[in-house]
Structures are given as C-alpha cells and as structure tokens.
Length: 574
Ligand SMILES: Cc1cc2nc3c(=O)[nH]c(=O)nc-3n(C[C@H](O)[C@H](O)[C@H](O)COP(=O)(O)OP(=O)(O)OC[C@H]3O[C@@H](n4cnc5c(N)ncnc54)[C@H](O)[C@@H]3O)c2cc1C
Image (cartoon, rainbow, N blue to C red; front, side, top):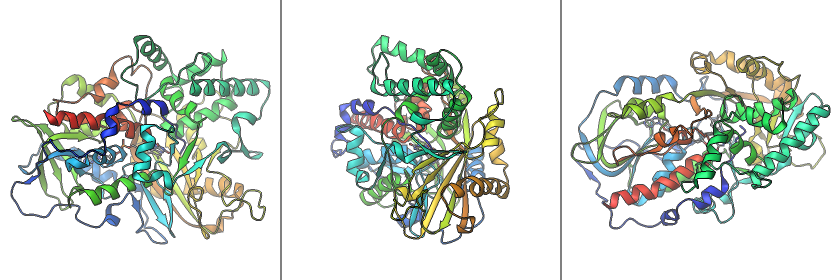
C-alpha cells in the first residue's frame, strides 16, 4: 500500500530525552508484584505463537478473512466495559495495545518491565505478515520512509537491527499500469495532452519544493514539533484548514486534470482510505511530498519491524510480560494513585492489574469505550474520528516473478509497487464510493522485492473503502464475493502485466481491516483536536498511537513513542 512518510527532520528534533532510551531505570519505582492468586500468566507460549509474522499457515490457508477478527473484538469490548476485577498484580507500566506504537513504547520503557496487553492472538496490529514457502509478505503495513542520517529514528532502526534487512526502493521501483503497459517515473512521463503535462510538471515541482523546503515552501512535519514559533504554527494551521484537493487546485490555479487527479486520488485511497477532497492538506502533503524521498521495505513489510520489537521484548522482559489474546476491557484511575486495567484473558476470565502508568496504544474508538471517567470534551474528541476499512489480498503464485521484459538474467523483481490505472479516469462528478468500487484494488506490492525467492512469488493487492459507509459494508461482506472480485482483477490486469499465467495462482488470501485508518480532516490542528487526542489523562494515562495525529504511518507510531516514553519515565520519578 502506498504510504508516505512523515517528517524526517522532525524525528531528528524530537527531545534529546530519546537518547536515554537504552538507559536503565535505576531510581524509578520498579515494583512488580503478584498480589495473590497463583494462576499462570497468559502469553507464556513461544514467540512463534504470537509473532507479528504468522509462519504457521502451510501451503493452503483455511477459508476466512485474515486481519481483524471483527466478531471477537466487538463481542469483547462492547459488552464487558462495565465489569471490573480485583487486581492480582502491580506493575509500573501497562501498555494497552501491541501494535507498532505499543511495542515501540514498551521497548523504550523495557527497563521498567512493562506488561503489554494485545487483544489479538498476534502482536503487530496493522503491521502484520504471513509467510508462504518461507517468503514473508505483508497483510497490512508495507513500507517505511528511509530516516534521515543521524536522526533519532535512524538510531532506533539501527538499534533494533532493521537497517540490516530492509531494501531501499528508488523511483524506478514504483510504476503505474496504464493501458499502454507499465510506466516508470510517472511524475516525469505521465502521458496526456498539454494540460496534463503542465499539471504534472507543476505539481511535481511543488512536491519537491515542499519536501526540500525551498521556494517559500515548508514541509508539514507530523507529529507537529512542539517548539514551532507562532507564525510557523499559524501557517501550518492554515494549510491544515484546507483540503488536499483545494491546496492542489491553488497550486495549479484551477482544476486538476482528471488523469492527474487519478494518480493522486488512488494514492490517497490507498494511503489514507480517503479522498483528497476530504483530507487535510497538511496530511496529504506530509505523505505525498514525502514520496519524492526514499522508502524501504523489509521481508514481510513493517511486520518485520514489529517482530524485531517483539523479539527484543520477549528476550528482555520477565516471562509473561507479553500477553497476546488479552483484551483490556476497562481502564480507570485509582483513588489512591495509579490506574487499574481490567482485561479478558484467552481463557475467558477477567483479571486486573494495578499500574503506576497506563499507555493507551489502542485506537481512540476503543479508548472511548473502555476508558472510564473521561471528560466530555475529550470523550467527544475521541468519538469524533472517522475510520475507514481496507481489504488486502495476497496472491500466492507458484514460480519466480519474471521481469516484465522477460529478458534472461534480468532482475527478479522489476517493481516494488505498481499502481493500477488501466481504463479511463473516473468520469467527472462520480462520487468516491462509486469511483473506488469501479477501480477495485488501487495498487500492488511485490513481496519478492525485499526477499528474493527461487520458486514463490507473492503479489499483494490493496483496496481501501475510502468513503463513509465502507466500514459496515466491510463488516457484512461475504468473503467469497470479495475474493472473487479481487481475483478477477488479479487475472485480468495484474498477472498479464508481469507475464505470469493464472495457472500460477496457488492461493488468494484476503485480509479485512475493520477500522484501521483514521481520516485526517481539514481543521483538526487549528481546532486543538490533536491536543485533546494526545494529552495525558489524570497524569497517569498516556496515549501513544497513530490516531494521535490521524496519520496512519509507522513514523507516527514511532515518533509518538519516542516523544512520550521519556515523559512517562520522567513522570514516574516523582
Ligand atoms: C492495509 C494497511 C496498509 C498500511 N500500509 C502502511 C505502510 O505501508 N506503511 C506505514 O507506515 N503504515 C501503513 N499503514 C498504517 C499502519 O496502521 C501504521 O503504520 C501502524 O502499524 C499503526 O500502528 P499503531 O500501533 O499506532 O496502531 P494499530 O496497528 O492499530 O495498533 C493498535 C493495537 O491495539 C490493539 N488493541 C485494540 N484494542 C485493544 C484492547 N482493548 N486491548 C488490547 N489491545 C487492543 C489492536 O489489536 C492493535 O494491535 C497501513 C495500514 C493498513 C491498514
């Protein structure tokens, strides 16, 4: 899936406190006690049982939606949030949610022996993967932005060993599939008349100016740096107050030609689950301008980053600290200090932990349900976010992916990402729902780009439902109908373009994500919404998750973890 980057330089600037992320926490309250009850802790199984990369599926997987287990999640959170249990443990930190944000926060605070509760059987959240014949492929988040040399983010990746396994993708790794075939270098060559060429060149220049901060442009960094001066902040708020589409029209001084609009629109559907007309220009530019910098993919996508974090935590934390299949059902401040987290174990019992600090690393729509005593203002802020659904289809193909040219000895994988743009652009006036349904999957990623394999190819098709109403549609969707539709597109468009026959298809596995992407709408920054989403509650409950900025990216998750972990640590000193 296309995804932009966030603010490379912002991460460089994040508080120097991050430099302490490997320091041990002597002087803090490291108490970890069992308060009675001898029942075993959940999550005592082996790493392979709860790793973000599922290697257990075999040649053919059972018929089901992968991704979110929607029924289970709904039955747990929606029915249990009034019930409480007596705490049988006391720990310094509990992290609710074992996605990228929660894992990174736990990693940064690992000397405090955090307990991580994850409702799904596997950690990773939207950054999960599977493996087929030893080839890892993402079922969600696919790639990351190469961090600036010397940045804090670069140190983080290096420290967990990710920089040794990723493969960088250059501009030529991204293609568009047009009626005329695959086209590399879309922003230089996208075909069309004079209006298309003009818009293409103007926008390309603009994106590069924004990325480089030249010709009066500024790169909108998200997470927004705390120390912005009032003028810079006002400029950012004004940018955020516009839709991405309105901003691009301003750049062009008029409408965006349909063919160019399609390029950006499909990117927005794929990256945000939203149309450029409803996204803030700050979010849109942060991702799209970032596309003109470098990206990298790991075997299995960003699940490999999550897996590296899980491995570190599994090794460094006391047994039973990582608790898969444990859904927090109620979180509340305790009268005497600290907070209580009640959770449902995989065995179906309710247990509770008392913690000095709780990190809510789950989405805000969950936090709104399970966090008790929230002030109405913040409760309303949490509930105001809109989320979008997603399908990801992994085509498992027998044999090696030939290069499109078929030239002997050519590179195994000629593209990393391919945007599907056959046929005419959507007719003017067609709504996003109709246009995106007609399009189906927007882009395809090759798992073989990051991991070569002699006899297996996995191509991943991404299709978001970028409109209000897409979520209930996904929830009630019939697996065979969704799969049949994606398979038609795979056979008719994708496979011919990579010179592979349909007989190569061994399996087509579809992941369904219920509400993985919050929509960054115009005006959130100026209205103070992001401040309300992020501010700690009662000085003891912190929020670290992509929703803090409505920006679905690994850089948001890691940026927020790097920002908040030192503050949580500091708060424990008092
Ligand atoms: C299809 C798809 C493709 C994407 N592609 C990219 C990409 O290429 N690059 C990129 O950077 N980003 C991508 N993203 C965005 C991705 O969401 C982020 O990169 C990142 O994984 C978000 O991590 P998070 O921890 O903030 O949120 P989440 O992944 O949502 O993690 C939240 C976690 O909380 C858990 N949880 C929820 N409720 C509870 C509870 N009550 N108790 C315990 N646990 C709970 C959830 O199960 C989940 O594991 C993609 C997203 C999707 C859906």
